Length: 304
Image (cartoon, rainbow, N blue to C red; front, side, top):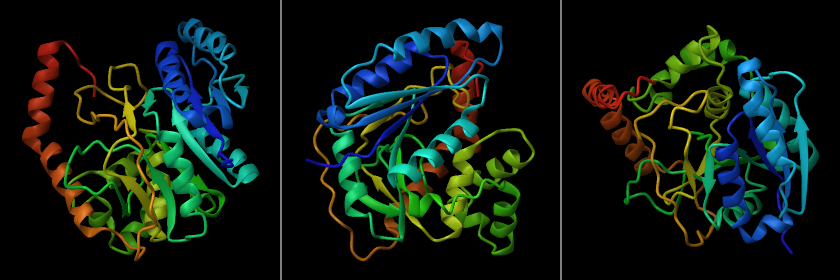
């Protein structure tokens, strides 16, 4: 029997999203062999309390996993602090973790793929991250590939990689600039990851993900990514903390098994990287953003 990695699920105030995430996980045959840790954040204010309570009532009814362990925060930690603490605690205990947020729906073979990948690349120091969501919807991408970029929608890592995480955004930005890597970090300037990091430093966002991305990028550590998405992000309906509307990152779930074969040589797939450059160039241009903004305005969606 496979020694399954624990699943860490971070929830807050979205009971319907949380339930859809759990139901999708339970459709995975390895759910019954997996320990589920649920980190439930505390309410920011009285307005959020009822929804937080509803989520907490629901998660105490969850069955179908090897074990379900619930950590309820007494106050509002925020997503970044919650994830950094949860991942650090459990990856140090188990050596590997699978991480989800409440707005993600997973495919029936998600857990199989993640555990296979964690096992296959366990002793490969050049690979530090696994990402199971593909939003490019580009059929030219292979089933799996290696890239210097870490997505945060359905991911996994090991303790040997997480030790490289640097929560100090200022230090990360300084190194990116000193080594003249900002353009590469931004996919040839097509997407503002460096700007996102600068905004994190200024307190305008609280992204743990941009710091994780930069931490591994600066260590030349790769991510195993999928060209067939095993995760769908439903947080672009205006309910999320950091996600706006527009359907920009829509993905279609791959419902069949996705085999994991160790890629050799272990190096970045530059053709796949160019696919991301084209994707961001197409979706992040001035006109693309202007058109999306007009469409959202016409629909009455004034989100990000």
